[in-house]
Length: 445
Ligand code: SF4
Image (cartoon, rainbow, N blue to C red; front, top):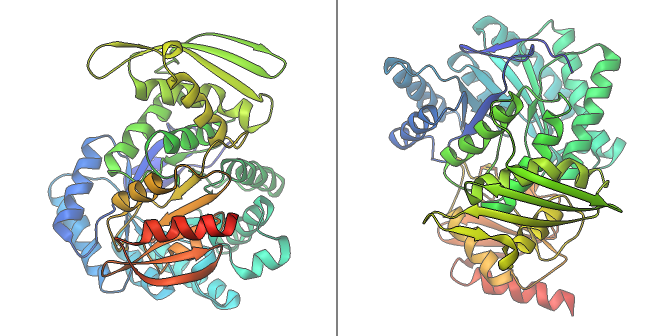
């Protein structure tokens, strides 16, 4: 797709420029020093654009201070304000940042009012040279659009088209759009559908690409690389975020890998591959486990997502952190990694699927610790999707793909969800993983 070039602060995206890599702070925005520290670290790691949540109008002053401090230090990284639920906050912060990200699904409860507020936001952004991201999430599409098209990739693409057309009608060129999902197939299909619709309508706004609530560790890297690389390899995507429930710098590292691969500066460590009757045998010689995971996911993600492959065997070796060479055929590790990629691409499920938000300034507990505890307690289950979300305000609305939800309430308490229904409130964190496990087991009997 040939996108137009737009400007976010001093960074240009689209128009065939290299892919811009983004991340997001997971600190409380009111903790200006901690947020500044994450911004500095992300910039030093090669992040091109950084997003900071603005949960309330009082945080407008905090994000303004953060941006001013970075500029005074000579750090020119564009600052993006992340808005949920408050069009007033979007209007207030727009003059003070380089881009505002809004989610049409929760910009305003009333669709007509949301359109009106968005037109006003466009005016404020035009006056201040601020870009806008129209950031749709599969988990939080508005009722207006799901009533028409269901909770589908088509609904995501049609919602994006409506808001892009509002940009066009208001003569606003500095917009970028994203359609994220934690389900890799849904995410890829949504972007492909949107590109078809945009081409038919003659629209060329750049695309921000990512898998949302991917979780952490190897499964999250596999989901993100398989889906993002599938799109990048088709020429879809101008800027990316690899969402990890980890330190934001880790997101930048994986994002830079994808950008370098897209630019042709790195090549895969795949040494050989044979394919017979939809089954592949891949052999790698990788300098690290991380390289192996990223290469393997990019090399085979698209064929698995598009169902051209139904199985894969991973062989070869990688160099461990202690310098020893790990032979994948000599341990169960090759099989475990292949199973993980098959699950990331939704070909076969061997254990629970975890989705987890990356955390942000709204996070109400130790999200990484909660995810680790939930995984530990529930790893023996299969055929179920468990969401671990950082806040009670947005978490429940963002976990549409989950069978079960584990959501931080704050003050050491957790809410448990079955689908979209809250079935337990105010559960002490120490008891919540066990209670979740027993509720899931009871429902499976
Ligand atoms: S669900 Fe997670 S990422 Fe989303 S607003 Fe809440 S804490 Fe932030």
